[in-house]
Length: 408
Ligand code: TGC
Ligand code: FAD
Image (cartoon, rainbow, N blue to C red; front, side, top):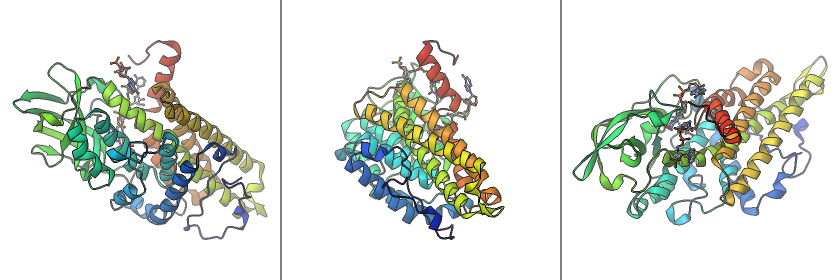
């Protein structure tokens, strides 16, 4: 059943595969649990993705180029910090609206959702939560409007899953700190105006700070050769004696809980986002299975194809319910980091499995860019790893239920 409760009419769909014919899938009438504002946000972003993302994404992805012009459009549709207060550049909506916006963006492409996740949850959120009032006023409106692009530097070449081992450091020097070190795999760094950077102070405590990319000694080389998230730009952050004004360092927060609280916000968005990629793969497979004939009938009429489709919609429905419940907990300020980990892990893995099954239903055509499936599949390999790997999230759940730490 489609989201508006009508029969899908997919069987009568035209042959042109380039037009974006996506429609949402809502087998359990979850729409009834959404507010009017949630549905309006969803529909507006879906329309924007159909108009601005779908027509260009295969081409940009093929060329491994970031569609930078979309930053402004993302700002205009309110994709940067949807649940942050309006006076701080956000959208003033609830957490479910934030989630559903990420779902629609990732339906278009995980890299487009990444543009919004980083800007809203990993750059605006820490500035909103941890920076001085003067810093909030200086940066948040321009980040919310897309005038400034931000990036988030936690991962280092030798410290990915274990960020507490970071070696990037600051040393006090008059009215500045001197920043040295390097960050790796940083989404948007080559196009960023500023970076939220996490580094150890002289006491070995992790501190957060805003570093402007024009600063002397600060470079952001691009990482090339990615087979995944090709429409998203990724780079390094290299700091060689960079002078960071003291007012740019977040005054109160110390320790890993600073960056990890930002990750909770972004992981929550990914738990929703992955459903978008899964729905697109399912939608494409369902339509293809009704159009493609072998042995004299549509392949959707064979039991083995129906098994794949039935399992896909079952898994999507379970993931939707998980995300919706997590959203209601988040609205009440009660979503725990471990609950967020479970949803991120489950939903991304679910989406990747669906992409693989969908690729099979498309046969040989499934490996081409005539269909979105292989692009989603390759993207989801990154999504499975960033913001905490699949196994790290399993260990977070394991620790939560046993009380025993199996990381170390
Ligand atoms: P641990 O001792 O467990 O925790 C240190 C402190 O942090 C607190 N905490 C959290 N706080 C808020 N939110 C969370 N999710 C939190 N998780 C833990 C914790 O209570 C403790 O507080 P306190 O007061 O006692 O100091 O730290 P650990 O060193 O043992 O590490 C735990 C571990 C492995 C789970 C953590 O380091 C981890 O999550 N590792 C994965 C790293 C990761 O996710 N990196 C992501 C980099 S950013 C990214 O990928 C962006 S992609 C962007 C895009 O394009 O979309
Ligand atoms: P490692 O930590 O080296 O892990 C390798 C393998 O070992 C994994 O399978 C992992 O699960 C496993 N492993 C590690 N520790 C354990 C353990 N204790 N027990 C069992 N298994 C373990 N980071 C940022 O800070 N900002 C960004 O904007 C950003 N964007 C990214 C964009 C892309 C395209 C990619 C690919 C990554 C990005 N990252 C970013 C980094 C990302 O968060 C890390 O890649 C991720 O946290 C994993 O770190 P790693 O790659 O060093 O892998």
